[in-house]
Image (cartoon, rainbow, N blue to C red; front, top):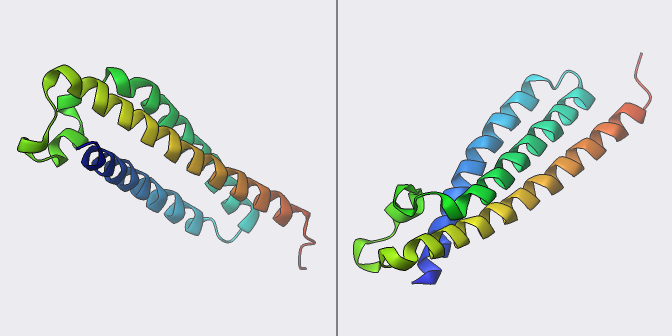
Length: 125
């Protein structure tokens, strides 16, 4: 049962991060005339995504389990009882949010580092 909850939580958070990534990528493409600015903006927006994920991770154990997407994704017969559902779903969601926050932090670091490299390159006349 726990495996199904973990898979549902990962799918839910990954889907949300994917939509955020589409938005960030689209914004970066719009700024491609200045690659350094585009990378810097992507890094900052990824860092903002990381912050949101960390906040969501801190709220996950207290968020009502029956209002989460994870709860809706689990088949009715496979759902844990109300006595333990809050603890299980909240804990799993917290772990997944933290993991994806780390991914966003690493992406942000990479984009900001690339931005610095692009600023150091000589500009074509």
